[in-house]
Length: 105
Image (cartoon, rainbow, N blue to C red; front, top):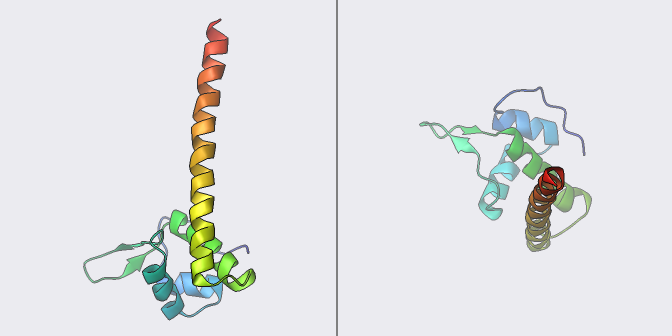
């Protein structure tokens, strides 16, 4: 799902709920269910979502709303995706180190 949001640092919950076509209460519920999702809050408690939060929400929305996963199933998928992402990052570092070694030879 492509989310139509303007480029900026932070988004309000209203902007997020409109972009995903869901109620703000569902976004708040997902925050309680998915530990990966933790927007910044100001002193009043107003949520501010970063682009990273939006990406996480896209993944959650895709798994739950489009693929039909249960919340527990979506949580398991997110854990698997996070592990895969960590492995990829480590492999990219190793690759960069090997390229540097090759250049020095």
